[in-house]
Length: 298
Image (tube, rainbow, N blue to C red; front, top):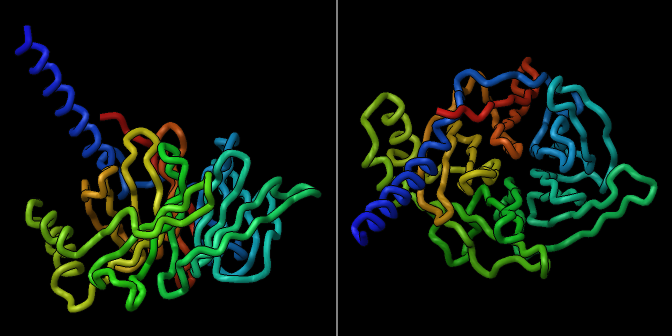
């Protein structure tokens, strides 16, 4: 009887592990559904979120003006725009309940309540991060009631490995930033992961980007927590890379994104059913775009 229970437990753990690893593979990144081309004022779209309580609506910011944008998640049509602060380099947005949080590249956070209403209010939170960290990703970690801030660069003289990119946590109960990074994406970890992968043309491209250059060029531009597995999905506009980490920060998946579809991926967002949205900035004569990737059950 004990052996049967042990076998069942091992099978359950194995199934859970396989499900977590395969979640990142349950999207057709090569054939996303175009939600819509963005209007000119969103050429520099830099962050994306699903609007709380409105599954058919998305929230967005762009990196020049202090405005919130609400977008139809089915057609891509712009529903409204409202100013929340003065112009600045705003890089990410996340809905948490009725609140809307916006991150600036300097690490400053803004909480907007009753957005677009006559009594709209904005609270500003300065963190210990700076422009040297270059915050570009923001997401809500519901399991720990915190925001995760992904840094595009490693600030000089901060005591951390320059061949690493770091993610900090902002506690929503205390409104304090973690003293240390809660996740580290280091070059050595990427090297170990790639050593276990099948040797394909894409694998060679990833090795060239991560390992064959003098500089560690990973530059997280967006982050989102998968609602079913808790995995962290991260894009790097530099290199057109999608990386998936498990809840412990270990790499579960790594791949290149088609630069014709995603010329500058700057925002990620999940719906509760696992649908993934990716936005990409305008490049040359093209438009900024938002894509929908349904969660495929295999």
